[in-house]
Length: 576
Image 1 (cartoon, one colour):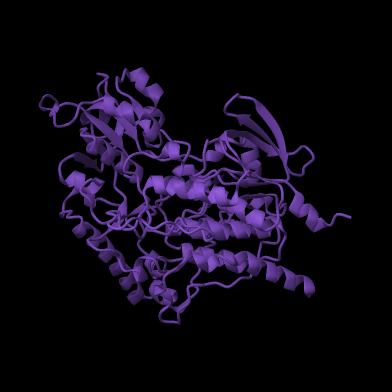
Image 2 (cartoon, one colour):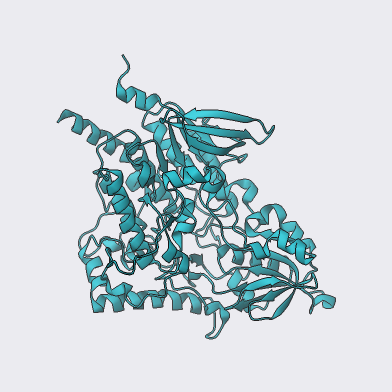
């Protein structure tokens, strides 16, 4: 006779997406004994953002070595003398995920399968999916007992209507218009739209205008400038960054130190309580972030008054890059060398009437041979759910207009959160109801839908692997610390949403829930500990005593045996 647990293990599971979150989730489910796991991806190879067809020249990992590593596969070390300060290239990162899938997921990944319509099964149990084959266009209707969404938030470009291809056509704009996500496939169009910048007859000619101040826009500028093209970047502000003429010590960059100076939704340790609830602690935090930022500016030879210093605050924002050693062919050096022009505190408002220009918000006109948009991404879920299902599950942004007559329910009296920047209008208007960034609160009692990869993290490998274990325990109905009802889950997400608005007031995280439903960023160690604690497992695994734990280097092998720990706890619970 088949037992209830046998049914759990044999029930079909669809993991949608083959990036790092999808790969580690499928691997974890298989190791836990799930026998019917399918990874569905529209791509032709694994890697998600790091799939080979998305790699472009001079792309490198914007994380130090090991922050994309999964515990069961060593990550190759960069070659000696690598100028990227221990970072892997895009090609090496892509190969790592191919190696992982070959080692652990052979025969489990179905390529060229574009999931188009997910909805609740008519019986009320499980899910129906329409899956389109990208080769022949045929649509196959499938049924799965459980689904894990690992589609991420960096695959569906967000393009302002007034700058999209239709607006360009209506204005008669003659050059190509592409999003930075298309650089690998359409970069040649940008190159062919303009002559090399050093050609004398084109010194005063049009440039390729890049919109946005984030990492993708900066990478686009560097690519074009290194190809000899004239480039102008237009943005409100730039990402903040770490850089240095020598690497930051491991006990700073690869430890919990940066998370220690970043306030979390709850303060677990005396160090955190001192730093974030006292006047002296606040001053130490402020000086720490100032020192990190100023060291980056000085190491990169960025003078006072340069537009390159117009960056977001690393304390209040998630737009933060680790640049490593300053390099002559990288964005900041190319700006200082005059090969990229930066117009900051500005935005592109529309296309010019001559078909060869764009107009800024202050009325200035820039001659433009092409327009490249680093304007971010929108939720990947909009393409795979209809609006009714998104609303039913609470996967779409939820209205969050505050009642002015109602006192604030949730408020954190941290000294480090005093004097915040203004709340972004969209952050004020919208909230997410996805518990921990993993389970829609409305669906939490069903245990048939989960999400991995939404908690934007500095150490993505560590966090998505812990999250995969959380999801597997959730599906297996293991004893966990969970809300006991939908109402309790909604109350928890209301608190989480209030925290994100106070912690990151300038980030409208709910607008792209497939990527930023829950922001962990520098607080990824605390978030991972929260998930481990939910499973009843040991936290703060890097060791150290009351004084030294913030400086202990975090390693992915700390979580290599989480499955065995979960198994032991499950067995012990059954014996009681």
